[in-house]
Length: 537
Image (spheres, rainbow, N blue to C red):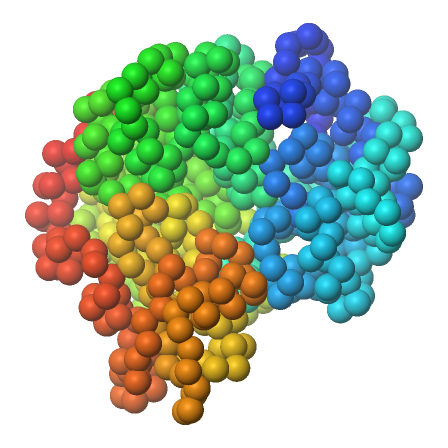
């Protein structure tokens, strides 16, 4: 039916000499011809290791040229990529590898140091490829890929052929693998191209982790002949320098980056003179940042609402530049894009659709919706409806124009710098600390990141600990963005009927959110305020 890697074969004919993937920190760039040769070499290298169609290949990597090649080469042979953030710790790495059944991991020396601690507990793992050279049990990338044939045809992939297991934070403790197919990705390419108005003259500055589903923004640009400048790690100085040096037309941002720019020194505007649109999403951007952005830069913003399970706006809405009547302010996330559908349902009865202006759970449907959760039928039944609707767990309403507003969360999820943190998952790890009896994780307001996680801790009788001690322990056991930014010690946690922890009570007491959140403004007033803040105007 289709293999998403074949766009490289075709684009090499249309743009034979154009640099399309640029890694300035490495001094490396690829034309489509060069990229195709590297991808074929990696595909053939996997085959030499006994990897076949349907097998899982974990990509435990930062933003490097090898990361791009690993994804495309895995897809090209019909295998399934398993993205893993290189900052994941032992416990998290072991779970993802065992749950996915990955037989190969591509990583760095830093990643290999973590893998060494868990490999004995991951029975399906057969090979580790290290990109920056290492002796011992690992296979050096150059030795393996450099000797492989740089040619070959992509594997035919059926409609439901899995391209990726995108792990999402778990509402009940452990991450779940959203099953994304080649057809899901093709739908996402189509939606994102339309949302951005992409042409082969565009240059995108890309800062999101490639192992995040936001990688779709870069892949879509590559698919349609644009040039992508990949940053390995964000810093404001390099970000501005690359924007000017490469005449960037599309910025990828997130709330902390927007905060840096709007609060930056005079002259920042000059670096962004060629930019025609900025992408943000993944987290609500504070109103103060929106207002500063609008008045200082006047660059239209594509405010994207989407999830791993929808490949961002592949089957979700967004505030598309040029359609101002559907971009209604910092609270609005716009209208459905491409072939996607949005409706609001009763949180207690998803069969019941709610009317205009009524707040309920946001449900999405479209061709980029994941097939479900890998080896997790119960979670799949809870979120993926038989008629194709996906229940997001977010709360919101639709106005009279079909524009979506996100108002709250059905669950206690925290969004920090665009990354989702589920309290239950962090709590389950913190409870492994021998000094902690009970813990509750909740959100605290942060203008730059939107929200940050905080832990309320009850120690076991007779135990003593400091906040720094708990936080240092947490840093050793979970990825950085999940680590609480503060610890509050309590004699007991607030509970309903003596058993159910009230995270919202902690959020209201210690979260320091702007007053409007806790004052419970009525929906009419919220909508009127939202409509006065016009995105990108």
